[in-house]
Image (tube, rainbow, N blue to C red; front, side):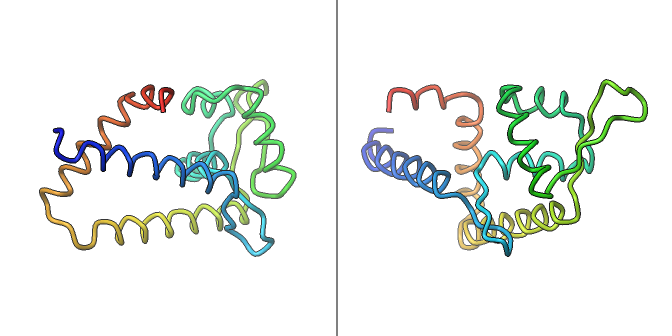
Length: 150
């Protein structure tokens, strides 16, 4: 474990730094040069995968604060990426759908993500893929709490 500890730690810090810079700058995904944060992209992907999602289920699934989610949804509705309508089944529930413009952004995100993953995995071995998957599984299971120390 200790052989590459310093180098791995340094790379991990570089990745975190790069992610923070990218998120602050935002991602330009459409022709109007509007920037999207990682959170915007994450929400668009969640809605796009299911075609329609209630606000409540989106909040529950993503564990994002209701106030923050409301402001993001309202901004995306006003910029034409989302539609927000009352449910036909339960008038207390609001449903979210991507507009045509939002669907274009969703498709662009999926395409770029696939290209990135293909680039990363292009010339690595099966054992290296397994090691990457093991690493990412550990990170996804909550070891991010360690980042507070960084």
